[in-house]
Length: 378
Image (cartoon, rainbow, N blue to C red; front, side, top):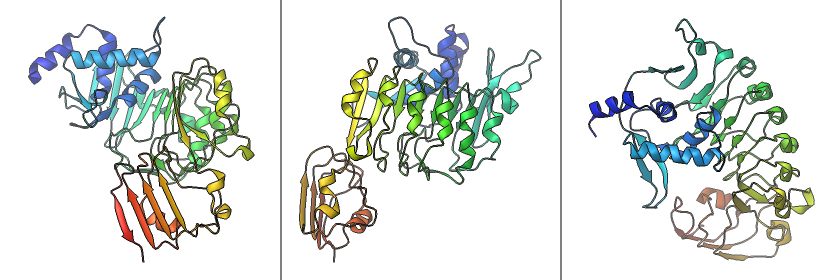
C-alpha cells in the first residue's frame, strides 16, 4: 500500500480503538521490530483494550493486532518461519515527534516517551509529571532516576522501563536501584516492565502496594535472585513473567492466592527446604491459562554432593541453568558433555568458572544462541 493511501486510511479510520492502538506504534523508531506482547500489554495498561464477556483483555488485544495487520497498517513478523506471529513493523505513516488523536497526546525526547492527555485549552498537561499516563523507555541503555521521581508520577498507568525490542542484543542497566523504592506510590499503575534490566537482584518490598497492577514483566532480569514474599497481595495481577531469571531459586509461597492470575511464565521448581510455592499449589489458580515451568539444578547435583565425580554427561531435557545454591563450591568434574539441552543458556567462560578443573568440554545442540564447542580446555 502506498504511503499516501496509508495516511488517508489512518485519517479515515472510524474505529477509535484501532486508531488509538495504532497510534502507540508511531512512537517507535522507523523500521523497528516491535514485540507483539509488549504492544498488547501497553494497550491493556492504558485501558485501550479491556476484557469482554467471553474474551480476556489479552485476547481482545490479539484481535486488535490482527485487525491492524488486515488493514495493512503493520507488517507481521514471525520467528524461524513459525506460523505464529510474535512481532511486527509499522508501515510508515508520520515521522513527526508529536501526534494528536482525539484526547491523546504523546511526545518523546531522544530516549524516553511520555504520554498524557490534552487539557481543555489544548495544552499538553501530560508534560506535568503528575499527569503522565505512560512512561516508555525507547532506547535509554543506562537508567538514572532521581530518588523522588517515581512518587511524582501520580497518574502513571504504564511504566515500561525494560526492553521492548525483539532482539536480546539490546542491553539495559540501572545505575542505582534506590529510586525503585518509590514504586509503591503508583496506585494507578497497571503494567510494569523491567524486562531485560540487569543489576536488579531484588525487587523493592513496596511493589506489593501496587493495588491496580495487572501485568508484571520481569523476563530476562538475569540478576534477579528473589521475589517479595508479599507478592500474593497483588490481587489484580493477571500476568507474571519471570522466565529467563536464572538466578531466581523459587517462587514465594502465597502465589497460589493470586486468584486473577491467567499467565505465569518461569515458575521455578525450587528447593523444598526453603518452603517455596509448590507446583501442586497452582491448582487453586482457576483462571490460569498459560504456565511455563523452569526446573533448576536438583540438590543431588550440587558440587558438595558429588565430590568424587569426574565425568558428567547430561543429554536432553528442559534444563535451563547450571546455577546452584552453594556459592563457594565448584564441581571437580574433569570431563563435561552437554547435549541436546535446547533450553540451556550458558557461555563458555561461565562453564569454565563453574568447572575449573575441566580437561574436556563438549556442548552440542544446546540453545540456538550458543554455538557448539568441543575442545580440550587445557
